[in-house]
Structure formats: structure tokens, C-alpha cells
Image (cartoon, rainbow, N blue to C red; front, side, top):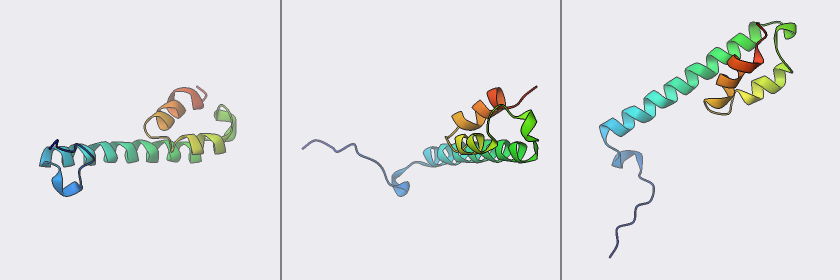
Length: 75
């Protein structure tokens, strides 16, 4: 019988896999918090586009906050 290679539960992960997930999650949350904090403090005239749209975009994993820092802020 073939072994099923579906999703693993948290208990089935190795310590290294769990640590990788936690580091990724912490990085994502830190980047999200930094982007949202900057967006909140920045005046609307220093933001390219709508602050509301950028706030929503920031919730798209790493891509949203990174895009805000690269394209959303006026120099």
C-alpha cells in the first residue's frame, strides 16, 4: 500500500520544521506591523494612492507590506 503524503499535523513536524514556521510567521507579523504603523503615521499626501487600499494590501503576506515600502511611500 502506498504511503499518503498529505498535510502533516503540528505534532508530526520536526523541531526544525516548527521553528521554521514560527520564524516565518514572526517575520511576516513584524513586517505587517511596521508597514501598518508607518502607514498610520504618514500623512495622506506622502502616500502614493489610497491609505485604505494600502492597508488592505499589507495583509497579502510578505508581498503587500514589501510593495507598500517600495511603491506606496513618496520619497
